Amino acid sequence: MGTEFFDELGETLSRTAKGLSERAESLYETQKIRNKISAEERAVEKIMAELGKILYRRYRDGEEFDGELAELCGRADEHRNAVKEYKKELADRKGKKVCPSCQKEVDKDVAYCPYCGSACPNPEPETEAPEPEEEAPAEAETEEAAAPEAEGEEAGGEETAAGEESQETEENASAEK
Image (cartoon, rainbow, N blue to C red; front, top):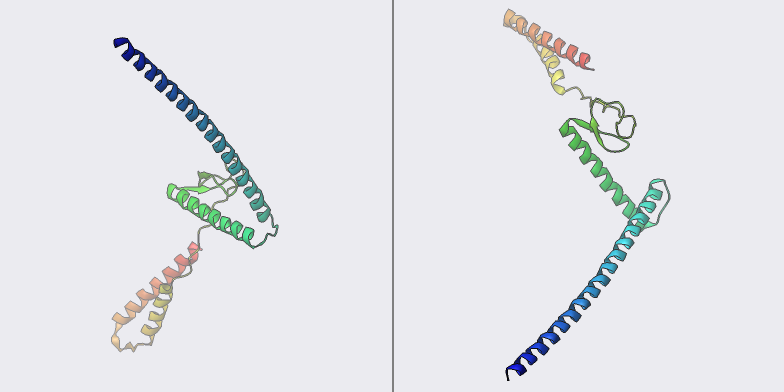
């Protein structure tokens, strides 16, 4: 009776182990097939990305495309321009500039990119239009000159000070240009 129990237990364990082994082998084969599927999908994605790059390059070279392709290429342009602006803003925050050729950050004082050798011109400082405040002192001068001379020398003294300030402001503005 004790031997029957152990015999049945041995058979049960053998069947269970055999079943687990078959399942593990099935799972292994299933995973191998899934890996092959993933590899093929990655290859397709890579080819599609390369195809997209070729089409986009043709678009940039001036080739005409139908509406859907032209729209996608236009959207890609918008995003590329946004990236350029963000890179420029980030470089400005770091006290650097972006190479117009390779788009890498370089020091602001370099004339040529250390990565690609392209010329890296310094950005032109934005010239500001003369502020309307400069015109205001000139108008004040005219109004003060038109005022009656009965106000005394004190008004004349203010007029001279305002005139000198206006003249200094104009000299500073022309020196900055």
